[in-house]
Image (cartoon, rainbow, N blue to C red; front, side, top):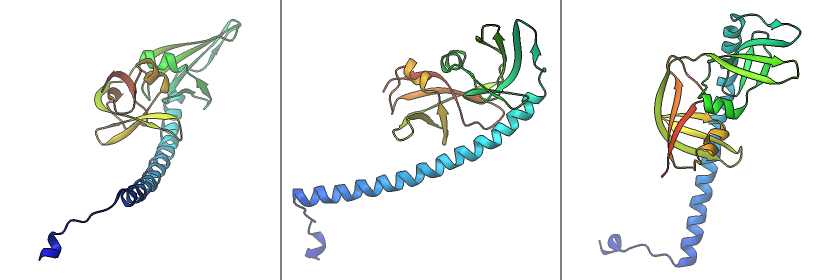
Length: 190
């Protein structure tokens, strides 16, 4: 009985070796978990892109006069997808400031000198969620864990609010559908 009550003692060197082994094991497991998450993101992204393309095909056709070109499309979290399946870059600052979410409808005016001017013409209903901000060193991307799901967020939004991993964050996501991306509403510093 006395042997069971003996405490297991390690010297400092043994503690360091054991801690290193534990941390390496955690690192391996985290890498596997992240790979699964990013595989799921890639699969979901392709499915959503197809849905956005179908939605964009129902919008007004491209208007092209001598001075400008007007294109309507669907925001996919990073870009606007037109009915022709073409992707157009949306400024991260504009997307952040406008709190664009996947599925919002945009109008792009390409002026005679090549300037891109976006206008949000339909904003779907969104719900507000609270989560925790994370940062992936490997991909250099931020994400938010909210309601048991991981959402990508634009880096520009996080840098604007001076967010840091571990901060509490309020995000907006489409009310009626699953999404990969979320719009950042605010960050509550830890």
